[in-house]
Image (cartoon, rainbow, N blue to C red):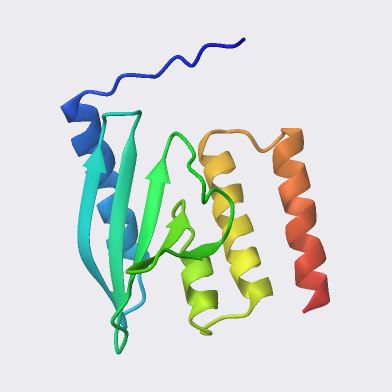
Length: 143
């Protein structure tokens, strides 16, 4: 049986991650969305919770950005009762959920973000990068 080796994060690590996530959301949120709060925990790995409220809505969207998964992993937008939750920082999922962009547009945005991350790490020659690029090109041809 494989043992789970939990990575320990300091309070400084948590603060740096929260600041980085806050900057990302401030720079990328559309003007009809408000960043309400950001909370984090380093108890069981590293988890950041970003609370967003769309103008005219009463139920918050929570982005759970974490180095470990929970039961809602990879489910898109999940109704949690008092809030909706998204795993990760994919704003396109939220915009699609509220009908502001199509599913294809959301996917194209996500793939462009992935490619940008690979480029920033100098990984343009990897198989993963090439596969993401291929997916993106196939979606662009369909439009």
